[in-house]
Image (cartoon, rainbow, N blue to C red; front, side):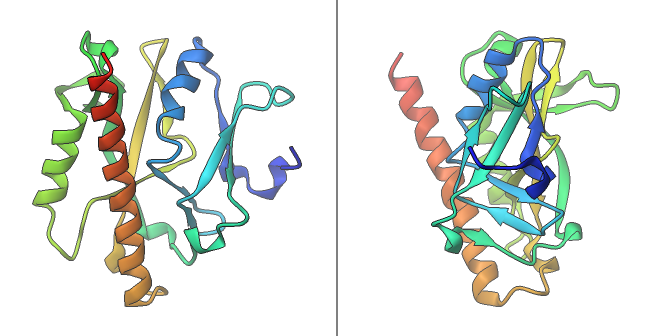
Length: 196
């Protein structure tokens, strides 16, 4: 791999987990379904691969597809990407199957509500105003360890109305791509449930 960490530190994530394999398995299911945001270059990557280089101890590296330059959105300002406080958690964490959507308190304790991931996200998306849709993305630091061994993913979201540098066409394209990625995650979860 010719990727150098100095190229973009936002794309080299810490994977310092007590159960590293569990963390790798968990995050890999989002490789083709959630976009990644890099604040240092103000880009959103919609097509990328995840690598776990053996020579970089406990790192996950995001490598954008260099041949898919049209799948990278530029001029995504820092203030257009905000933390949501929502987490994707593995159902096993709460003794259930599948993925769940949860909130985590400031003291890093599980919040009061955990809902199945797909209906939870669909409800949030349906209840957002049209000019402020729910467009989830990942950023460095969003993959976290919970209760000493469980990987969870915090979600950020893009606020298209803040993207003044983007044309209306590009804002619509970004919205469409992020939404399509979410739909593909729903399909993967359905297929996974049917395979049991």
